[in-house]
Length: 204
Length: 204
Image (cartoon, rainbow over all chains, first blue to last red; front, side, top):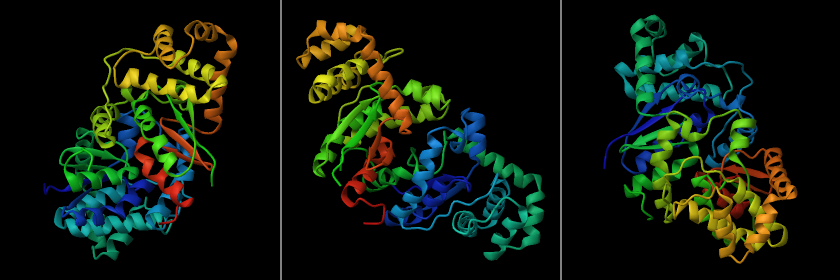
């Protein structure tokens, strides 16, 4: 099979960031492309699923604090946990879809920079100005993007993307769909690799 | 390091069952023992964490239906999803701790039978009679167990076990703790194996 891997994430998810450092390597090894789909965990987890964010969930929040740094070690990539309140990925996600309309490859480069800004540099990504800085770094015109972010059509692009993610039963981040198989979690890259290698769940 | 692997599960969790088919093999490979700790997911998830059961959580419940059979395939073990309402592991868990007082090895054999009854034979484990059938099959005296289950001290054994699990920040099933490292989920056996092999999260 040769279809793409759909990669769903929210920029505010550290596990989404960790997945972003691995997924292209994994896909390339198996001759697949990756389509990146930022969505809003807040909408999915709180509104659709009726759950609390992980960091407000007893026990699980303790686990997350222990788990993030060791998971980064396992992948051999840097990770800082930024000391920021209320980080919001709305502008960054809208910017992603606005860029993607004209250049999907550039949109991915932009997404990598946003992840890097938040999870490696520990800097906020909430403000439009921050988003524009990262877009400019990959060659996007800042004024055009600023106008684009004000455009109702750009807001609709993200809204549609979030709706499509829910329609495809995506929850949590990272979430992968390949050949109609949904695979949730940074801890399941081995499953994704198994599928890419065998196109089956039978024992290898 | 040589300490045991603490294995936390609820008999009503299919992922707990799947883990039970793998954990002794994994531990033996690395010269570790496994201590089995049934606990009550309902208490942890609903009372302590304030969450809904997976099968009542939108999106996640759809995923679970797809995920269970493929996970069983990946481990090469049988799994049926029983068509039962309101399965409850209270009696089985109490019986486990009652047996364990005098014979930890037998308690594990009993636990395996309970898992098998529910997730391979698809039969209920809720009633005391069902629990006694499985206990008898490993040589436990049924009348003694029936008396034991009525004893307030037996109820206290389970209550203490659940409290201890919460104290150790255990949530979800399966959950492993080894050398103070908490590892949650059937999808993380690879992480458990990594730790057992390297006693470190650094890249191998």
